[in-house]
Length: 178
Image 1 (tube, rainbow, N blue to C red):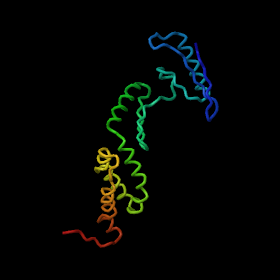
Image 2 (image 1 turned 90 degrees about the vertical axis):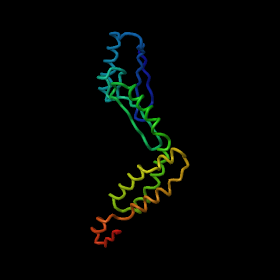
Image 3 (image 1 turned 90 degrees about the horizontal axis):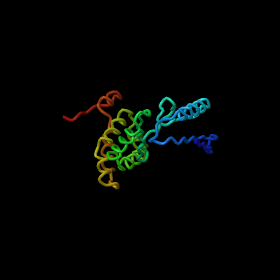
Image 4 (image 1 turned 135 degrees about the horizontal axis):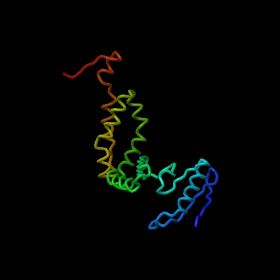
């Protein structure tokens, strides 16, 4: 029995076709005929089609997502092994905790100040890598309310100072410590 449901979407009607082939049953000839019909109609209409476990009849694949606030990691296998995508996501969930969400909210709020204090793109890039590689994430992992401001201010002060080559380019005197 073929069940077709019309769902109301923002861009018109969305068709959802549910074909109840039982997971323990062998493929039947009528399954292939239904799959062919679904693929032919959907692709002819420019619709997204995913005939489960029939990779040639898919023009999109589902992915496994890990979200931590502003951070989104998508893992896909092109339909070859969705269980692998889910397994990898579960492993990453253990490694990438809520501290990443807190860090990204902090970084987002910090961006205007970094741009103001560090005019050189190269030095800003160095600052961001230094911040990411600093103890900030470990501090936030240990204590979600950790104050990473003092660490950040120290890095801002360090990277706000132009390097010797940049000072020479701007014809500023370069005084290096002895």
